Image (cartoon, rainbow, N blue to C red; front, side, top):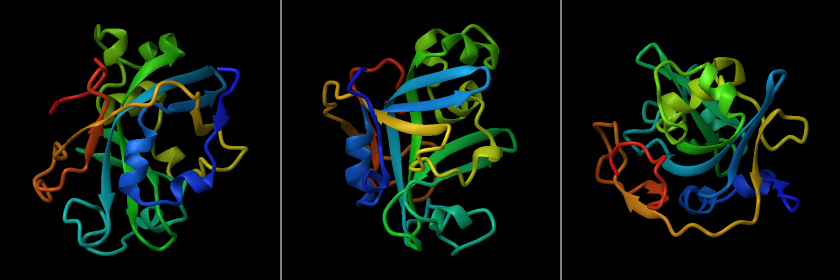
Amino acid sequence: MSRAHRLTRSFFDRPTLDICRDILGKYLVYRTPSGRMVGRIVEVEAYRGEDDPACHAAPGQTGRSIYLYAKPGIAYIYLIYGYYFCLNFVTEKEGFPAAVLIRAVEPIEGIELMRERTPGRLSDDKLASGPGRLCRAFGLTLKQNGWDVADRSSMLYLEDWYGEVVEPAVSARVGITKGVDKLWRFYDPASSAVSKGR
């Protein structure tokens, strides 16, 4: 981990599908007053453009999706089913709505902190398996919506630890009813933390 470095805005300022492939194996880091939590990213999905019917930008810009149109590297967090939060990172150029949804990570550090927020008896590898579980385990809510993860002062950011490169498996996105034909879900086939739809 001595070679770890934070990902900068240039990482996010690229085509979304390229980022989906490259972000697997990178590390989600959240520094809180209670301690640091780290998870290795193992599953993501792309949402891109107003012509993507599953993207929040499909109806055009709204109050909910305003950060989806922000500059690359912004955290876009939203609420679903009135209970679960989902973490995305905005990609491509400012003004064009695109993001990568982080669907699952393998907990690496701060596991006890994650467990304190997670009811039931999930195994460690399932604490952040699925976008809702991930946000619950990390304590991410609408309070972090709009945070700039490319800013050096941000407590939420991504790191590259220069580990093994992941050769992703690709499938249709899951948990949606529109845009199901797009093969925009990327995941690490070797990871037990990958959520449903494997």
